[in-house]
Every structure is written in structure tokens, then in C-alpha cells.
Image (cartoon, rainbow, N blue to C red; front, side, top):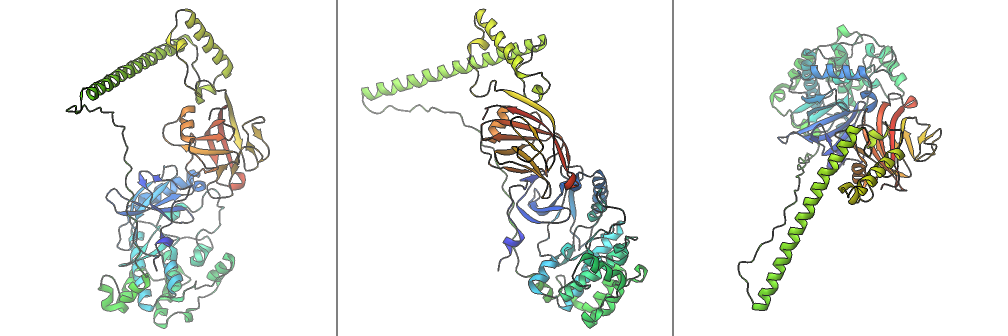
Length: 543
């Protein structure tokens, strides 16, 4: 059976196509910190891109911790860790890139195969303990070591998310004294909000290895509170584990941190029992059986090439076959083509002269204090669009009486010159309010055209009457840019994961009105208190 469809999921509508220049090829999964995608370096090496959840990205304390832990994680070099190769704690949203490990997580391997045999458990514990040595050497405590954070490669396990998991702890919406981590794999001191040290990771290693040997958590299932109570107050039932492994598990799962084995002792203990297999590179043959069928990693996506328009080339025939009548017909066609080219050149030159003159007139009006047709930002500072339109018409009439300037004689482009413009700012959306294209523009219910929804991670704007498209790049979008981008838009819901202050979203109503939303503030850390403040410019009947 090929598990490629389980490992590499297609990108969804709310997934970004790229992250900081990395083209995303597939979705790998999601976790407490965000979503994980498959991408490739410029040299073609596969990497895992983790994009941080918006509610964490909105927290300044998280960004500070994330930056500190990324700096520390860059220093980790170990045979059994997934190396961090790139990251940006100041990105929108923050992200990190680690080398992709071609293999299942321990969670998936156990779910597919069942409990691991003893040699594979020994190989697992030795590899993870060696990874902890590399992690602890640079002053990092993992804090969230668990089966889903251990990937099984052909040459041994790989520990992921080291250090960075610390950045997610105790965000602004985490109260003091609340435990952070995965309950089934916590140490007693972690469950009681005590001091977390390298010994905490050793306890988690014991629980992770016990999961591999049993096929289920050592402290049982049930509610998080019940599991944590047993971890703090009960001794683990080691009789469930293979007899030859019990002495090592007893050292790893000691209640007192100072009584636990060190990662170096674990490596040595496992190495002695694995014997010659420990130095065989890929480990015992049974380890390879655990991995299951190899899954081919998708190739890098091709870089899109820009297609430039080619000039029209008229090739003259080298000879004129046929009789005199045919030759005269060809000469007439050549003459017509030449005349058409001359005419087109004259029209283009006239358009260029009109553009230069029009720019000069607009510059003259600007110096004199007369505003030109406002864009979405200018219209918000003007007192209204009617007076500007009347001034433009009066200038055009005066120019026409004076002998016909280009502004008076050349008609404006269709459907774009002067649609009615309205600006409304600021407007604050909550999950209980909505915006409308018509009065009242700000509604106290959810019956308007644009609603703010925070039921899902990341929050989103949605509509039954309108479609959305977020613009990326420079700010100051115009009506023509929104009109062009919205021509093929069909999404009635737009996730705000990649939106920040200053982001611009074009909106098209089914009645032909077009709007530009400019985000001013976004607060999504607490969904029940989430708010979105925007400036809204509306162009009437502009689609």
C-alpha cells in the first residue's frame, strides 16, 4: 500500500502558495503551533516549513520567545535531530524550516504496525537519547517530547520541534500555574508547574519509549486531569513492559528528577544490549520493518516562467510566384499592411502625447491645489467625491472653450474614470457584527454583506453576497487593480492567517460594487474577544 496520500496532502484554498520564497508542494499536517508544509531548497532538498498560528503570532511575547529559541535551535547539530535551516520570527506570520525526514512519526508507525519489538525500542531510545544530548548541550529543554515529535527514518529516529516548543509556552492567554505540554507524556514536575530541566525530557523519553513498546500510553487514557493525577501520585506499572527493558524504564521514570538516568547513560545501556547491531548504521533489520513501505517525496514544483509578448513580425516573401494578377494582389496587401502599421504608430504616438500632456495638467492642478481623481487612500482624506468631480468637469469645460486640449477632447476609459466613491473609517468588526455595502454600513448583527468569523483557527472574513481576494506587495491598491484581480475571484471566505496591519483585501459584491478593505488592527488571540478594524472604500457599480 502506498501511504503517499496520507503523508502528502494537497494544499487547500486557505494555504499560501509560498512562504518567504519557499514554494509549498503539499501539506504535511498541523499541530499546536501551526501548519506544516513540504517545500524544497533551491538545490532541491526537501524541507518542512512550519507556519505559526495567527493567535500565537499576534502575541509579542511569543515572538520574543520564538526568536530566542530559533537562535538556540540553529546551534543544535546531531545525528538524530532534524536540523533547523531557516526561520523568521518577525515574518507575517512567523515560520521555520527544518530538513524533511522521510519517514513516519512514531505515532503513525505504532498505529499501523502495533507495538515495536524490543530491538527496535532499544534503537529508538538510544537515538532519541543521543538527540537529547545534542539539544541539551546548547541549553535547550524540549519540554514536549512525545511520539508525534519523533520521526522514524531509515537510519534511526529523528527528534523534531526541539526548543521551539518552549516559545509556545505561557502565551498571553495562558494563566500562571497552568501546565503546558501533552498530558500523557509530562513529567511530575511539569504537571505541577515546577522547575523544568533536562531530566524532564528523560521522563518524557521513558513514556515515549513505553508507548512504542505497549502501543498505548503507559499511564492510561482518559481525561487530562486523571492522567496528570496518576503521573504525579502513582508509580508506573512496569510489569506491562518487556522484562529486559524494565531496569532502564525504572531509571527514566523515577519520580525525583535527580534519580533519573542521563541521556549518556541511556545511550550506553542500549548500546550494550544492541551489541554489534548498534554499529550497523541502519540498525537491526527489524527497525527497517517498522518503517513500512517507502513513500516517494514529491519533486520540487517548477518555477513559473514569465511569458513575454512577442512582437509581430511580417516576413516578406523571397519570391512572388504566380502571374501578374497575383503579384499585384500581393503588392496591394503589402501596401495595406504598411499603411496599417503607420496608422497604428500615429495612434500610439498620439496616445503618448496625450498621456504626457495629461500628466502635465494633473501636475499643474496639484501645484494649484486642485485634487485629481482620488484613489482609495486619497478619497478617505477628501470631503467627498462630488466636489472633485465638479471641479474636473469645470476644468474640462474651460479647456474645451479655449481650443480643445487633450483632456477635453479624449474620452475617459470605460467603466473606470469616475465611479461614485465612498470611504468609511474606521469600522470595527466582531464575531457578532457585520459590514454592509449600503446604509447602515456598520451593523450590530450578522446580516450584513461581510462577516468576521473566529470559529476556526486564524479567523476569517466571509460573505454570502461577495467574493474576496487579498493583495500582496506594495500598499495603495487602486480600483483598476482590484477590478483586475477580482475578475476570476470565487472565494466567499478568506482566512486572515497571512493578514496584518496594512494588508489590503479587495471585495466584489454581486451587484457590481467593489470595495477595498485596509486592515488597521487584528486581535485574534482570544476568539471570544476577537476584533478586526478596517478602513473601507467602496466604488459603486465598478465591476
